[in-house]
Image 1 (cartoon, rainbow over the protein chains, first blue to last red):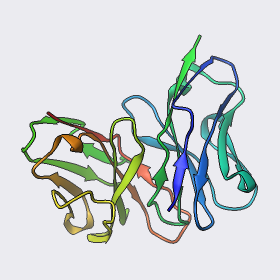
Image 2: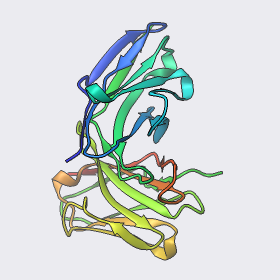
Image 3: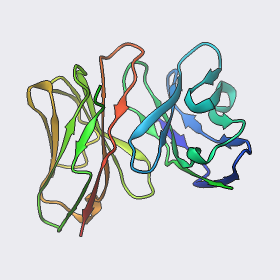
Image 4: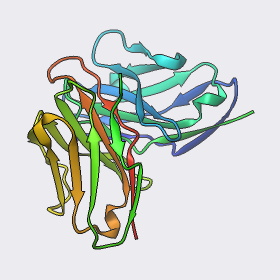
Length: 113
Length: 115
């Protein structure tokens, strides 16, 4: 069965610092990988997705993620965080062309001045 | 263009009562999904509609949950009777069609509290 692990429940970083959120997955077929963000009072917003091709994927808001098949990982990165990045981040995996997704438990990001 | 809209945003009900959640997908989106997040846990798939038909309801927890999608437009998720463990945030998502490189758009969720 597929699963997604986000080992960090809560991360605190200083504004302007770099960020890496970890995601490991288990999936029987070729994975279709996503990162979503949920800001307070908002729905889930897609940051980026990967299915094939270049393993470094660029997304919105300056985020990127790197797919590493050998490590079953899809970590999210940002070189310099802004206070508005404070939110909860979810990694997800699913079949291509279908949004029946398996999500991780989420990582809450706090930004300090 | 309006996004996915969910009503109500928050509902507090007593154990044993009935609650109905509503989701209005983006116009023209055939696919509609319901997900649920129980406190502190992962977001879990409940079911998938293609137009008015249930494509996959493997995630529905039990027969106290009933989902419908009238005329392939909006969808409702009814919980009857509600139990304490039904508390959580219920998300709805919609997308245009299957088998292509599409994106699911999520609503803001309905926070259900059963007391």
